[in-house]
Structures are given as C-alpha cells and as structure tokens.
Image (cartoon, rainbow, N blue to C red):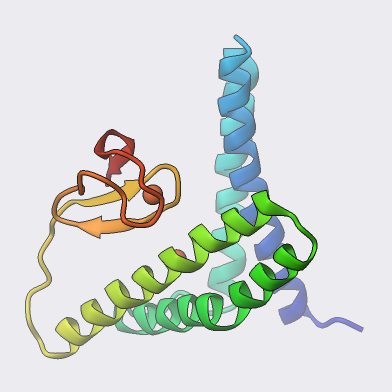
Length: 166
Ligand SMILES: [Fe+2]
Ligand SMILES: [Fe+2]
C-alpha cells in the first residue's frame, strides 16, 4: 500500500515529465505549422508545472537556498556515480548506441553540475558574494559553463553557436 508521501513523489515525477513532454510536443507542433496546437501544449505544460510545484511544496522539498544546493549536489552525485554508470553499461551490453550516447552526455554533464553546485555552496557558506554572471548551455549535450561559451563544447564537440545563454 502506498502512502500519501509516496503518492506525492509519484505525482511530482509524473507532472514534471508531462511538463517537459508537452513543451517538446509544442516545438514539434510549431514545426508542423500548428501554432494553435503548440499553444495548447504550452498552456497545459504551464499547468503541469503548477501541479509539480504544489506537490513539491507539500512535501517540504523546497528549502532554503543552502538546503536546495545540498539537495542538488546529492541528486547530481547520485546520477553520475550510481545511476548513469549502470545505465551506460546496460545500453552497451544491449548494443543501443543512441541510448549509450544520451546517457554518456548526461553522465559527463552531471559531474560538471555537481562541481558548479559544490563550488557555489562553498562560496555561500564562506559568506562571499556569488557573482551574477551568464551561464551557457550546450544545446546538444547540456554542458554548462559560467562566463563565456567555449569555441567547442568539451563534452560533445558542438561549436559555440550551439550554446544558449541563460
Ligand atoms: Fe545535472
Ligand atoms: Fe555539448
């Protein structure tokens, strides 16, 4: 029997996934010349975000920024040290090259995220000011870097033009 906390976790996962899925579906609808359908997907994605946030808030999982950095560090660490290595091995053994590449990109980038979050938490704990600088995200592999975009992505080799500024 599941309890309400388990149900909140499951609902948060489902709503979060629906949000991303609908945004990708919206992009596809735009490409197919269906702006009205794209808008429906985007509006619904926005509503799923509200559901996800409500569930997460009820679980008490949005803490102070220092707590949230700790949670992010733990999550990224789990992904690159436990989750993705096993997934990569499995994809290799099944000969699924596309899945392997997708997992390898994510695995490498989660390590970078882990480092960025750790460094930021240390700075915060030291009472130093955290610079509000631009971040650049590779639109192929997700590689994330502060300050300036590199000429080539060190993870996937994509050119500078593939970086999106946040
Ligand atoms: Fe990450
Ligand atoms: Fe990349």
